[in-house]
Length: 553
Image 1 (cartoon, rainbow, N blue to C red):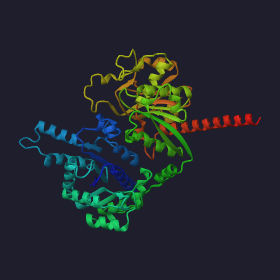
Image 2: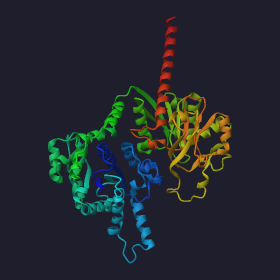
Image 3: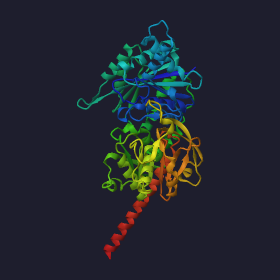
Image 4: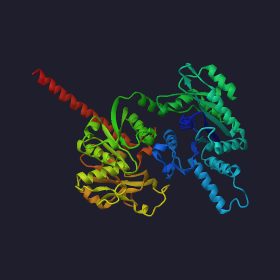
């Protein structure tokens, strides 16, 4: 039988429940246990697929095509395992299931209520991943904050499971905030006390309290929290702010979170956690030998979480190259032919990010043109790849009206067009081309040198595709389709001959990059940017030296 750990949050949102859950999972996994994590979100949307990134951050896509919360990205990056549709459940999905059952007559003659029908469905989903002996431990992160009206059914379901399952099979971790008041120059425990009290009033008693804090917790503070929150002093865990999320597992190891959890779950203390690879990654991350500057061109730059997986992929690839990657956010709406050189000339590489809609598209096209003409390493993802195709069609093939029918339905040269299977789609949610699809890569290409093999799979999230009617013209002019889907001939990868590094992909490689397996495209892109930066610096030095010699003459 699997053991179940539930992670709740109090006082404030965005405290890092997902990072704490992933860190504990990593420690338990490093001890040889089979662990998975799931996220229960209290919003009524079926999934975050139709949400604006400003509203919810990025929408993470799993191998099986589920559009999920971005915390699943943390789970995969930390554990180096795939998640699935079952790992993310929303209130909307729960209610949809219950309502469908009611319409089918499953509750015939009964009044359908939050308790027991909604809570029973929640419990069923909470236990689902632990049913087939595939995992030793299932960690469930409860979204939102204790006290939120929308979170009440989830907390009630946890209460019932805490009562129904054997005591040694459940563990409740409550993440809370210990604010530091600068005026008083002291940490305050009262918000934590109130949060735990509110959780207790809902019938759930936490076993461990993890305290997010800017300052170190003194023994007196820990004793006070333990006393007033009714936990052992050893179960008060300090979660001090860290320079990077990847240090959190080591901080939690120092606080013995894994040992305390295993003790409560009556699991034997197996061998010490093997974190060798993790520590090697951290050493490279903290002590880089080089530095590169990458321009990230997008339209949701005000919210960092909108491109979370891309940013984390650069951290992984940077460490692999022993290189610090400095990301310069460049809003595509503000790029023009007049200022593009000023904005991009100091970069070592350019990534054009994915997105939807027409806003900022022309700025992205201008940026791609600059990268193509100036030998600047370029990487385009999804919409970024499509912008590269449009730019090439306009400025190399001379198709001045070339565009995507997403932005211009009446273009005379739709080099990017709606996928045929999407033409009859009317509903927006969950209807894109989603999840993992195969790609066959040609020999003697940049893509082949990156992947080192001809057959790959990558995750997708799109409706529009490259229009194969224009492929021959593209390839005759030097833009090659180096990767295609073997089933429907969809162009997956384009690359430019004679350019140091110019590649666009229809899929989302950032979704498969992890600490232990950085994505090869990001690794090679950062390497190309480093070489470009070194060449640029060498050229500047030669120019400077020549100028000094001429002055001395």
